[in-house]
Amino acid sequence: QVQLVESGGGLVQAGGSLRLSCAASRSIITMGWYRQAPGKQRELVADITNYGRINYGDSVKGRFTISRDNAKNTVYLQMNSLKPEDTAVYYCNGRTWPSGDYWGQGTQVTVSS
Image (cartoon, rainbow, N blue to C red; front, top):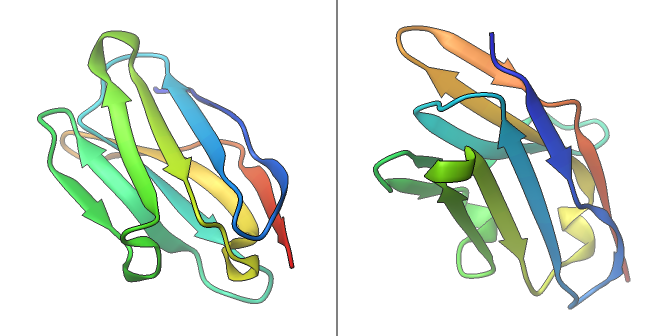
């Protein structure tokens, strides 16, 4: 079992920045962030493996940066140039071999126009 503890999030004006953090209870292969806006499906924001392979969702490329500290089992999401359409609940995700799939409790990000 893996516990994921998120921090960060909040309210910011359009064009501003926020940083999310997620700490895992143990080392896991892939860590990332998904988000879900009201009435929409959960979507990938970004994920990163423990050897540094990164994927970004198309809507955040060039604005968000994911990174991780393997020694701390922590993943970070730096969000810049935020837009109102980035408003959502952001969930930390961790995946382990062979089939572990874990989720954090979610943190609200609200971008005002």
